[in-house]
Length: 98
Image (cartoon, rainbow, N blue to C red; front, top):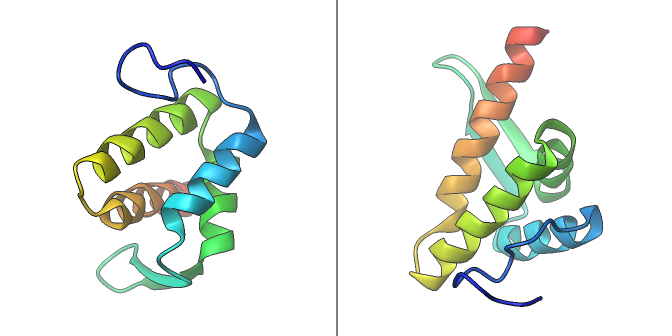
């Protein structure tokens, strides 16, 4: 991919590219506990986390997510906290819509 703005994922990525990149950024964990409310906590696997993001986020949102994860890794920040934040929003929205 041609890097023009300092972000290597400037163009739209294919679904398989997104899935591979998400897998790369999520590699450090196998299971993660997500607190969706004060009373509820969900244990989620790496595969389920990737599937949720692919199913519930638009292509534009996924590309933006990949770019944010890239920048966080470049700055040596913890990407998993950001991924948890995204998953909390997805699970919360899913819970509201039933």
